[in-house]
Length: 81
Image 1 (cartoon, one colour):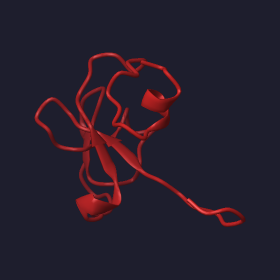
Image 2: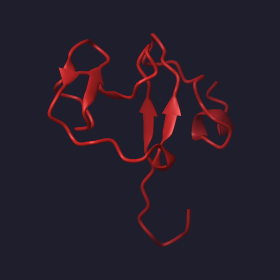
Image 3: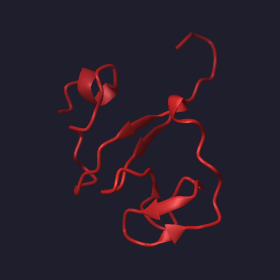
Image 4: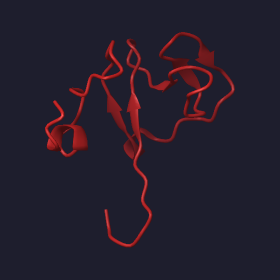
């Protein structure tokens, strides 16, 4: 990341089948086509970008599980695990 510029990053949690989750439910979602963590699907969302543009995290049963990070992520680097 460079200074004095707006930059964005994207992280995506996989469902139990290894596919990216669109969000928690119909109210809180990314807008990308996929399943919701609380059940159901977003059928008419946007197509996912290429996987090289975001990090995928393993499925977890708790929304407060911060152990699914990668080296370099703030969850790992700040000792949240």
